[in-house]
Image (cartoon, each protein chain N blue to C red):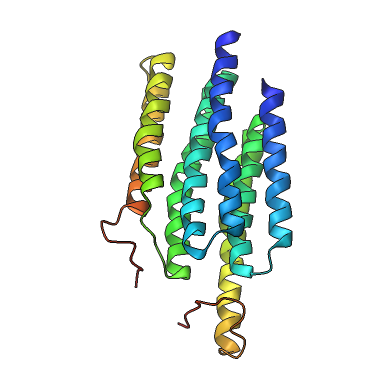
Length: 144
Length: 93
């Protein structure tokens, strides 16, 4: 019982981080909105993964899988409409540090099997989506 | 512990909805609405309803903001650039 409470408490961390991101989306300049949208899908995916482990229902990771697919796609669509795709170090390093720090303990907790393969897939999708949408290598340029 | 998660998700939903109402720029409202859809999906998952969360994700975080953006683009293109106060750095396409 206490371990599941621990997972849920860990899910609280990305959830609380969504608060300042909401502030940036609602009040920040145009560049920050897209960075915020990118960051929100990443943090929501992590919170959903941790909550699935906390509730003891591995099938809840399906929601995280959908988030990891829809999030970067949505960011790219917004970038197409708003004509800007800012490269943000915040999103990149949150993905590169936060996703392994979340997925690896989850893999250890679930053990080998199909659930672990799904967890690794979600983690890889989250990292790939964030890296593609945040690190263009340029200096904050706009897309055509 | 579940109650704490539900309360935090509820606060996020309330904050996002208030921000969507208070914003005047439709493009920014679309992004806040996308945040609202994700927060609602989180809330539904914490309330043990992942199926509702899945449909909420598809509708709330993807389709609705996309339709708003498409509408804004079409309206702007049709009416030309005679009201440019909506978006200061707006580019016409």
